[in-house]
Image (cartoon, rainbow, N blue to C red; front, side):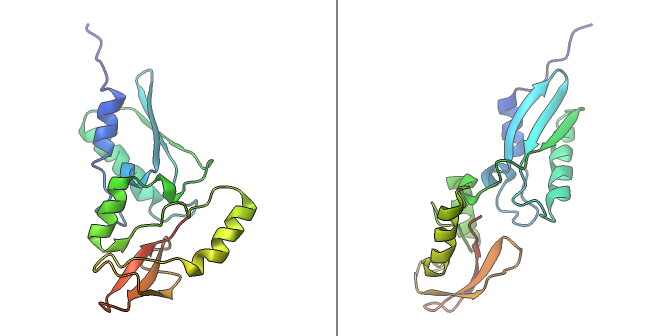
Length: 174
């Protein structure tokens, strides 16, 4: 009997790049940066996932979507490994993911403002967070104002553009 070869990890990464985030379907799980690793352990595919935060309500759906996408392609044995350290950061969102967020009407996180694990730098970042200039994803104006620290999901804040007067979400830096 001929041994069945499993798909390459590169092919699996491609498949996972087609799995949308359940809360923001325009962005994939790989664009979001929560898929940390893909490797074969004998005949079991191990997918390492770091949730955006430990209490993310979409985690169960994300895991089910990963398993379903892989099962559709014939992967029979999958282990999902949850990795909480290092914690996910918005710095892990790909350039393509940031572009997709903006096109969808969500202001992407500002580069370099995410948590870096150093307490004093994080305190400085949080202190300056109220001074962040958030660009409107619709018209490009930087004349925006925060409406609420909480948006349509816990990872977003509500903003409004004072130029085009449109409300929008800002993907908060974590």
